Length: 172
Image 1 (cartoon, helix red, strand yellow):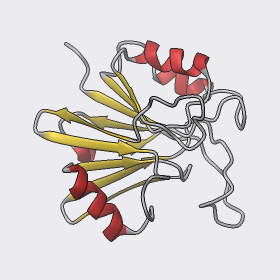
Image 2 (tube, helix red, strand yellow; image 1 turned 60 degrees about the horizontal axis):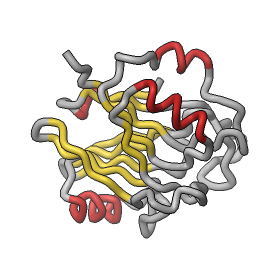
Image 3 (spheres, helix red, strand yellow; image 1 turned 45 degrees about the vertical axis):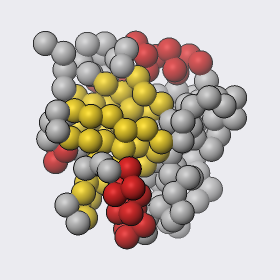
Image 4 (tube, one colour; image 1 turned 30 degrees about the horizontal axis):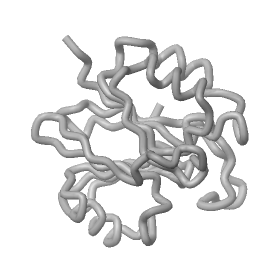
């Protein structure tokens, strides 16, 4: 049986801002454990692309603001798992990420139950107006020039979701 787990990952920035995905993450994310991978952009090198493809051949990617060479990537995509619709984008294409009403408008525009967005490098997950919102953070803990509070450290994170039950989202 194919895994129903959906890996949501992004803001990798290898090798520009980080050397690699942490070894403990790679141990958890072995081939055959993940049914689908949604990459929220800033996948800036080919070896990391190949690694993500090895985790799950069903790899969907959207363009991040630092994916300059990936001109053919879409800015947003939608996938369906049963009756659950998941939309995902990097975040730079949203008018005001972290403004809940505008994020709700984006989820409604995409006609999705779950909206995954990246670009902040910080994990976040919440429910608002019967929609679920997930930001997996940066899988490498790559530094960012925005969205970070004074004294706050970047902690590597990603998100796994049960493809049927969005409330099963968690950071690793």
